[in-house]
Length: 361
Image 1 (cartoon, rainbow, N blue to C red):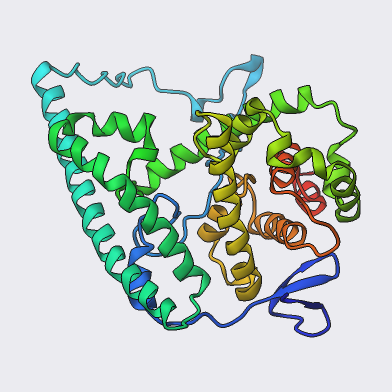
Image 2 (cartoon, rainbow, N blue to C red):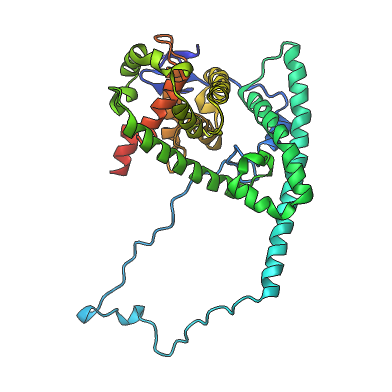
């Protein structure tokens, strides 16, 4: 399944409890076009230049003021008495505000037009890829991701086109409050970062409620160890089938995974099952291509889609989280229900690896 002992390829994989996952060569077919496709995407962390956007810490000034006798600020740091206070900018008039609003509206319109053009290019590439699949061609993970994202964007295109045609002025509000209606190619990197923060806040809220109501003998420590997790899966696996879970918990699972939490139980079950089936297919391709073949932005996306933290963490943390997920979800030691995988991510959402904890100290 792509797992080999560490002694085989010491420099080409990510180690997971004595095992590691190979990095296979990525098929370069369609990649010249696919590279452009991944520049700006709802699920991408690129900044338009194709390079991944890495989170950087806020600037911190550790310089202290020199204090003179009696606690007064030293003369060299004091503001001269003759210095003139900086006058506040004059308040903007109605005309200036209208002009600013007009300029922002123009930028959004241009952004959306470029995004639709990019989506149309993606559609052509995906059509060719699907035709090649019928002829026996095995897609790479990046090509699989492109097909998946483009299919979702095409479904969003019709309602988005109606809004863009008849209510263009509401697009900024839709991007903020209903990003699921916007094709991923029309969302900028800054908008994606804001969406990530909101998603993490929602997940934290859902996690607190669900863990507080948990009555099973399951702890975070049980789920953080592979052997203990397998024991939990064998003991409580039947209680985590879709049919055994009530509607309220299914709704919470859907919301945690970034899906719509509204609807009947049958709708929620189908929605969650469809997402977890996609994740399983993606896991198999990840195991084949290797985690170390992913860029930082791709690692963030992969962790987000599986309900794991992607903000304010290192590349090592992202790789270890994803590797542990693959080891569990592709395990041959036990049949782990998909809903148990989601449940475990709630417990481990704020967990850190020992190496990360040591760095913080």
